Image (tube, rainbow, N blue to C red; front, side):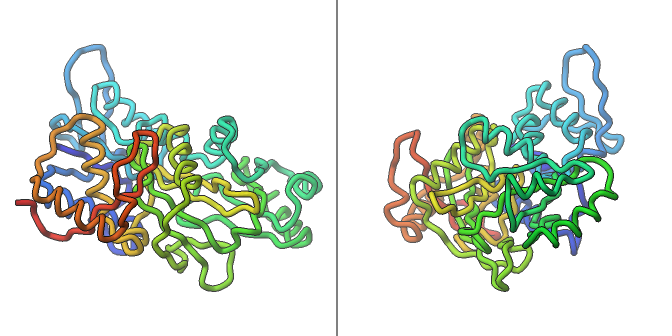
Length: 345
């Protein structure tokens, strides 16, 4: 398999997502996958009516890949989407196509799609200026969550405890330009706690409960939260799968809140972080992605029957009955064990 992974930044110390990109590189080597990590902004995009393959990157022509995996997440911009569309039209398989990536890059758009499908989401107001504090209090009450429209790893999210605190924030936001913020219902039952469900190719393959360790309301691992293996109830796994389906995501990290009457979808990610999830669930996320996308798009992936049996044995040891055969419509929680530097025979 020849694969491109799109990543907007340098793979360098201090870049939060860099370790995950390195995991893809290591796993690709182990699976004999030819992987290039490329910055979408470095492509020269030329569109004409001639048939044939065209990909110019940093002044050189690249061979056509079998698969593209975008890992740009919240940093996805118009140019990145244009590059993805360009290669989509040239017949390259893309794990999370441009329409799906665009739908989750904007948190409000994500909620609009999910609410339109009848899936449970927190009530949300798009911020405008000056801020109508009375509207926020009437529709959402206090405390209230304030979020940037685009953000990742818990950045740009805060909880205003009361109207006085929100008034202070509103005065600050009134000096900002554009509708960049969301005001969202605070789900008290899920304070400092949520579940990240990893959905790949229409199946829930791993889940991690995240908890704040300092009493705060944010549970992100990147902010010091603690993650543990979680066996989601069928209803939660099914909800996560429905979220990915409605958003058109082949690969999705779905964050689910606990509500008094069940669950609510906090958000979905097209390039979910997985360092904490791999530690908590003992899964190899890049390997699951490579294998699932090879199956999804009919791309040959060299591997041995012996290694398949090894995966099955390890999965049964970790999850027992959850690794059994299910119907195509049943969400499946089935991990592949983390593997380092070991090639299949």
